[in-house]
Length: 114
Length: 118
Image (cartoon, rainbow over all chains, first blue to last red; front, top):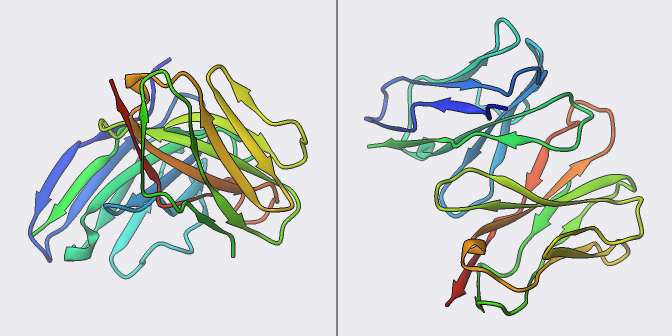
């Protein structure tokens, strides 16, 4: 069974530029999560999707961050414009459903904003 | 709001020895789940062990076991017979069992970096 895929693995941009991250969850997983992990901290949830609908985006900085999961499979997280403090690893995770306890994580995308 | 605290930023253990990582949490809920995740330098987060709050018996997975003290809101991880491959960041995480908007969301501690000495 293929795991959660993410791309790119690394990205370096300058502040005020835009960037997008892509995630492909495990096949059949209805629930998809995006987490932000700043260096030295644990991951923090940004947004949770159930199929193609958002169920929790309370911690997403909506003035600059956006995310979509149009067909209920792949998801894209965008930052526009990026700030220095957005430097972090962006982790995507998926689970079969919201009620299932175990989340499976992708390898993450490491973003550096200069 | 729930919080998770890991008070040990770094720990070190000799190969084949036993080490215990500490975790405390704060919640007003009675039904929840607790997890330990391992994150090696490659960054892929891997589930190590899970505990349901309604279960009194401590979870065990091979060399990994937990000491779950619900009243004290403590959830420590014991690694027995430590191996070089156990070296990683270990995160304690909390998940509500409720059905609200935050269902499924994991709340993580800051992590403990475990080094294993040969």
